[in-house]
Image (cartoon, rainbow, N blue to C red; front, top):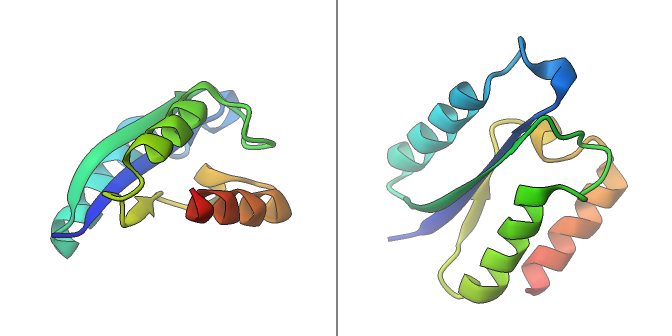
Length: 99
């Protein structure tokens, strides 16, 4: 069985647009539909996507370092929940894949 981790966040400005609970539900359903085990989820409440200096994102990176052999996928509900800076996002994806 493939295994995944999930990440979701909301900034203070987004709160009415895409709730944390809605994002979590999307990630859980996506994993279930695909037959993936969801190992853990990481939530940043009130955090901007300008950079990756976010508390739960740092926890996610630590989790990846410790469990990298078990993780097949990182699931986010929308790309802008992951990052609003495309070049930094691609660099971060590259770093995660190397870990």
